[in-house]
Length: 532
Image 1 (cartoon, rainbow, N blue to C red):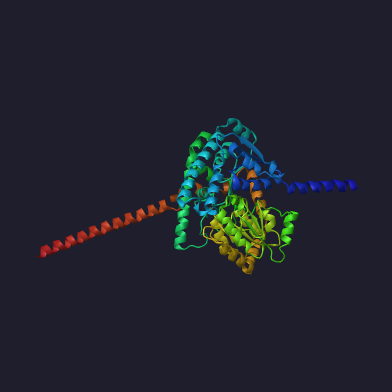
Image 2: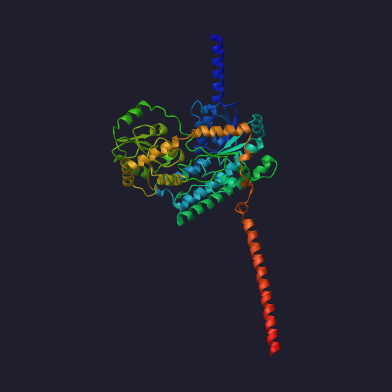
């Protein structure tokens, strides 16, 4: 009897483990640029690896070291990097990001607006050239492409700007998933649905005339930029696939769009069934702080701690701006933890702890954290939101302004202008957010909404990826709109035909009336002449 029970128990454990894990370990190919874009893919890769899947990423030699550096945990080190040589040096994508941050966080006299625009234009040209060369070398590398084909991948997951990944997915004949922020995946999403998607705009909720005009200008600008970038790679598509198809068409054929957003931070907008919101998927489990940090937090007493982080680009902050921030922070009655790289500002107060790197998620989860000063990068926003921390927002560039505008509407803090703010402005903003309980209440409410979901964003992302793998793609969820032109989707051709018919009928009626009038007038004239 005991033996039977043991067998039944083992069988039950086996069934439970089968249900808990994936039905079959899959092979996933990931492609993305460097910096935060690569890190976002790494977060997703961690979730897939924990489910037993294998993750491989082809990496050009000029990005290898930076991407390898991000694999700094046992789970991340399971990501297999396939390095291939390219005749390039440096990371032009990161260079563009650094330029934007230098313009926002650097000293004003470093360069003029015109000089900044010229450098961005030149760097954009370099980025297009780098992307083209990296993709061309990859597609022409027969040994690597043959090795990738031999691995029998189940799905290819790409960052929206990793355009070569669209071609590789089609060449390997496996389903394609695009994972990124809607602001960056605008072209692919718009082509797949023919519905405009929110982009990196200052005005996401307010719809006054000037705001609408600015939004329109942003959409047109984004369309032009993505069109230029697509066309830069289009000539490689036929060479890599052996038949003619555009990059825009390949992106619209993606089986799955994993969107780093949700309907809490972002305003609601139409989505197709294969477009899945996974905002906050990267938020990790909270780990204990180091002994030194824990002591610092506890020493704050009832006042609490202010956390300041402008992300990985704090190292390019200008001297004057750093002194301004330090002066404002020194005056607040709270302890401060500031992510800062560089020479210690002279105005740094005794209440301020400077660190080159901070465990941001763990600090935001700490009960002593009073508020968060952030540049409004979307990952930082979701971490603060998940832990119910109010924010002083200092957006610098790109989608950060749109994120800040959304949060302002939700009432979780105040916004400062990075270009005009002073130490007094910073001090007043900190005191306002810290002492006004409405901001904390709004932040706690967002945290409750974020946590009250049937499954976590990471679990949702992994489930949909496995869903695509199980069924070899999701053609039944793709909108027919991807095959329609803008004129066809909005029935402008039908409207033109109907207008033509109405005009033609009107013209015929007008001619008939005119002829009738002439006949009647002619008869009257003839009768009158006859009477005379």
